[in-house]
Length: 124
Image (tube, rainbow, N blue to C red; front, top):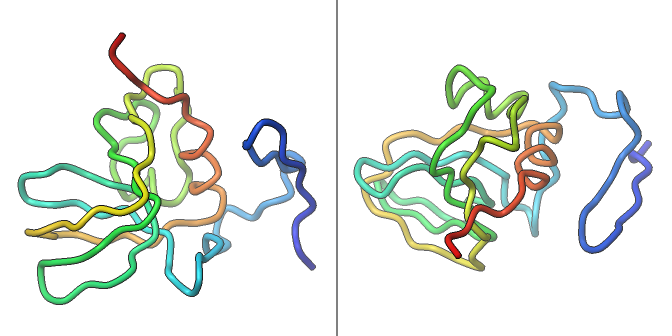
């Protein structure tokens, strides 16, 4: 049975406690939502479109510049963050090509929604 949700101003809201923390993240055209760590470009969250060796493409990618409220990327991929107001996640880009991928972590649906809800960090 799908989780009931409502979208307000482009943000999806679901009833508290309705998502099991271990449920896999919703896919996009069959692509899994993952956290991808690279050797020198940083960490990204998004849908892993393809990967061949250390090179891959991530759709709807958001760079995870700084996070607070998760001890590691492993915890972030499963639970998200507990201090979103302190995180630095810039705006999402439609697609990014990455080289030197060194780690890919599949995310839960709870983590995907949590990452999406972190306010966009930008310089003004």
